[in-house]
Length: 171
Image (cartoon, rainbow, N blue to C red):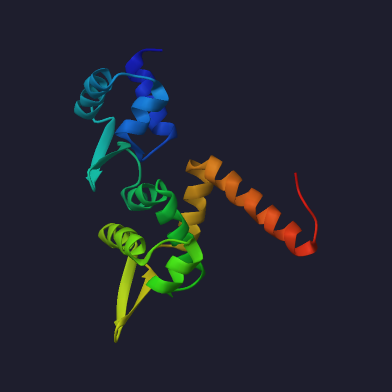
């Protein structure tokens, strides 16, 4: 398999991967990777989307409607926020408290999620409520299909939580 085929295969298996993570996982030099990505883009085999100083790379045939979710779930804090919002709308204080993050950190992530079109903010006086603007079933399916390591961690946490409620330990 050629280097270019390896790059394309890795992007196909990991849609929305960042440039740096792709270079790291393939153990490929930045210049070499840039060369192959330019060719793959010219051949219309991949597309790149820039957001917040990062470049996210997708196979050309990847669904446009899934791209924002893939970008968001690649960040752990944003993934957790989306999962919490899938339960019910929340305000900044509730999110900060549940995730043990500062309000300014929540604000940063909410701005990114808003830019991706994944959340709506509704002002109630001084209070801002965030609502999900995505299909919750699609979020779960994307996590399960494209981020199996994340899905495994979520399943492990659910098992731990269930056993904790029952007073048992799991190893």
